[in-house]
Image 1 (cartoon, helix red, strand yellow):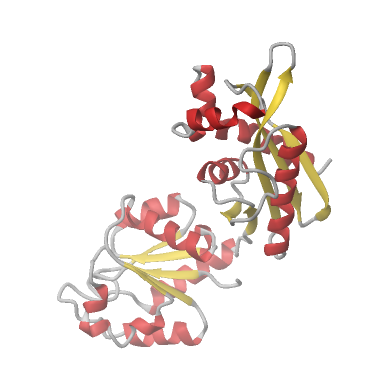
Image 2 (cartoon, helix red, strand yellow):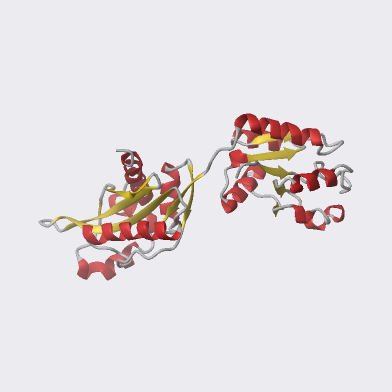
Length: 299
């Protein structure tokens, strides 16, 4: 992507208070569409599609998001950015309300304030594009997590914040609850390799597997341990495998699996808190391991 995404407010930017299209809007939007810009409409109005004066122009928009979302325009645009795998920093918002422009710019985007009396003008568009030229496109890196587990995605986003991160469903090749280092590490690596096969064009891949590992035979202490497998497109052959801290559990061995799974089924990501009585959750232990993996890739 070499051009910014142009995001337009509806009311008093494209149409006036009476829902009439400003006279210059059709020419501006058609020209931008002809120049192959991606156009998004972001509106708090629930039924933007019902604005009769805009009906002929709606096909020019690549996305139309209506209705108020908690967090306002910034949240709405962030949602679209996630769906289309682009950075908010590569977007320009044209809006008549400074209360939308300011938080958008604080989030990293470029905001252009539109005069509600005249609506969007070619000058507004030119100003936005000129500002964007001075900043330039920020390339987005993608990282694929070999799971759609929300806590794994959360941990990955906390560490690889400069990437666009998404999860895919892949097979781990091991039981749903791995037991022992070998099974856990294999599941982690299998998730990584499957992610690489599915999304070869990505910039990085992650396999995350939590397993039950015997830490002390004498006391029969089993810990819940995250194993991370990480690879980057800079060197796809180099796979980093690291572990996070282990948390003691009530698990007593393979024959105790059914009871143990029933016990933790209600706590999921809070299993670590449940067993230790601390505020540490599973995803926090994943974050520690992911930080080590991220630093290790260049070693």
